[in-house]
Image 1: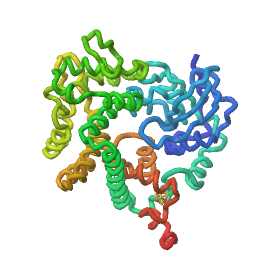
Image 2: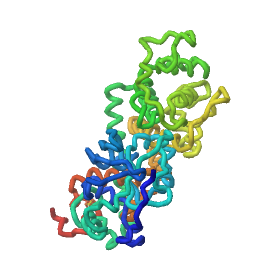
Image 3: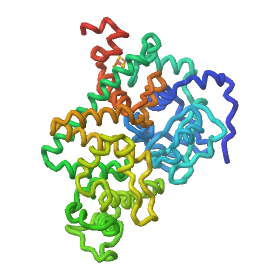
Image 4: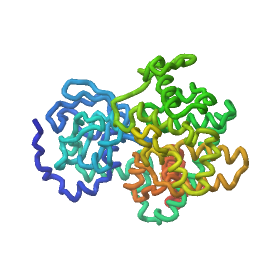
Length: 425
Ligand code: SF4
């Protein structure tokens, strides 16, 4: 039975449409609602045990929530939008990072309310928050804009400055700073284990594993005998990965796995088919097969591709599978593998060898690749400074985490302009 939503006559539709999503997220994590009579769109009682905390990385808006829906206690994430249809327009219904969403909170219902599904096909409970807010929208917005909260909490004044030009320049600068500092972190890993080839493969496998299986994929990469694998054809590489992962019995392939296969339970399943571990292992096998980008010297091969073009590097990451039946890596995932794994390792390589051409190629790629979509991107977008490229996305994260959240406004280019009195602080 669906709940009939009463017309929300107290708040005109145009006021609702003007509410930034960040304000609804703020209202949720701060608990600015009456928790006693919450029900889902399907009429099930909702009891919020823990509201969770804002997620600063990619994925759902709020993580670490515990909520009882219809008497069943769930632990997981909460996604928050202005209205229900945004779940699908943002593509969350296809993205396995949203499999753990236990409640979709919307300010106001629309024609999709009560019909949504998670990426794994299960029904997604929804809560319409507006009737339960403990204050009017006007005072909600007032507290959102004027009370201290998380980044960027000066955004209500961004229309006083030309934030889209030099504010963008500032986040680009911070983005480059963050990339260099991440490369330094990887360089420290390299110092502990000076094997750039293995580091690249670990990072690429990790990026292939998405959030759910990132650690497991990295553990698999650590177990592989790369020299032996690189002598095998595609089918045998694939069989070795399946047997080592624990997802297939080694004796099926007449293989012995040393020291021992991983546990099959280490792999999380149930997400989107494109992200299923078996399909990802077939794609990893293609990287290590005779025509694959990791067959000999992955660093040199990818640096060479990147020196031609970003498209060449992405194509190298998306080989056809040699059995002709499998699914090659998707373009979006290949972009993530490039930004999260390949470029940081190439940056380390460039710094170790003092190769300025390679460093420039890496920075050019970050400036050209598109920004992803996550909570921080949306917050900056709502504020009028939507990151467009991967380097701007990195910069927005760096600004939010290392400046706004730390109260370092006096060190921030935006803060020094908005609050000149901070200049000598
Ligand atoms: S650090 Fe900069 S962007 Fe963040 S709140 Fe302070 S002045 Fe605004």
